Length: 109
Image (cartoon, rainbow, N blue to C red; front, side, top):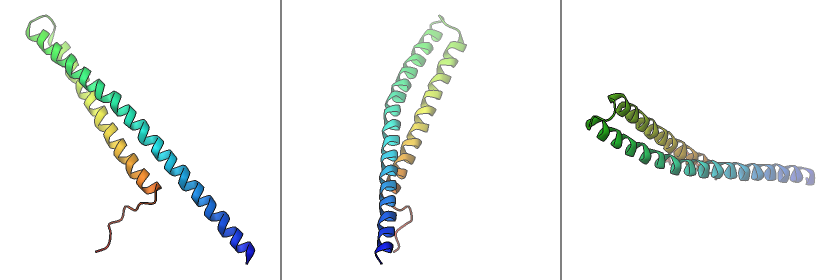
C-alpha cells in the first residue's frame, strides 16, 4: 500500500542520511589525525635533534648525564605519540571504509 511505501521511503532516507553523517564524521576524524600526525612527525624530528645535541654536549662534558637521558625519554615519548597517531589514522580509515559500506568480513572463496 501507499502508506507502507512511504514508511519504507522514510526509513531509507533516514538510513541514507545516517550513512552520510557517518562518512562525514569518519572523513573528519581521518583529516584530524592526519594533521596531528604531521605535527607529531615534526615533534619527533625536533626531539631527535635535541637528543643528538644533548649527547654531544654530554660527551663534551658540558651537561650532566640526566640531561641526555631526559632528551632520550622525550624522543621516545614523541615516537610513541606518533605511533599511537598512526594507529588512530588506520582505525579511522577502517571506520571510513565501513561507513562507506565496506565489510570487514573475508570474501568467501
